[in-house]
Length: 144
Image 1 (cartoon, helix red, strand yellow):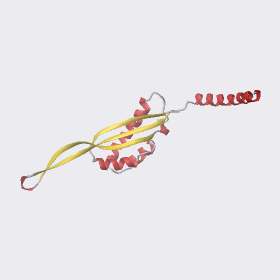
Image 2 (cartoon, rainbow, N blue to C red; image 1 turned 90 degrees about the vertical axis):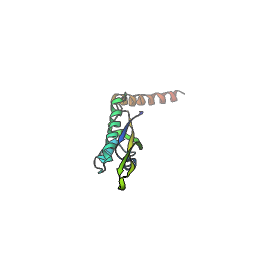
Image 3 (cartoon, rainbow, N blue to C red; image 1 turned 60 degrees about the vertical axis):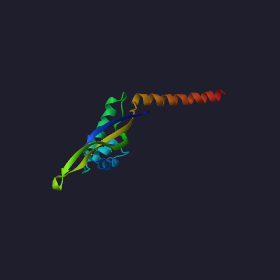
Image 4 (cartoon, rainbow, N blue to C red; image 1 turned 45 degrees about the vertical axis):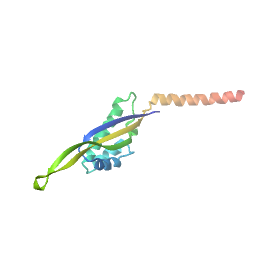
């Protein structure tokens, strides 16, 4: 059984990276089903953006992998937030001045990992093969 990975990258989120990172740390190293419930009940604005990134990575894994993935085994392998583009703006100040400030956006990277779904027929064949090998090995040892 092999582990498969997929990722999603959300860019240009209108929230500061520090605030978004707090929300991302809530779901780090959790199963996707648990993370969705947590993010839907988190009262922070950045939770919607993180939820969108997690669901996108989950969909990428389920739809783009060549094998069937067990949805219950999908977990968040990595999630981190970096600062995105900065827009320079100005706010009016006294005596006709203009004071500069920056609007900083965030980028969210999510990588999910899931286990390959085991087919029942293949599992049964493997069990039968193991059972048939054991008596054959015993017979070989007795011959020696």
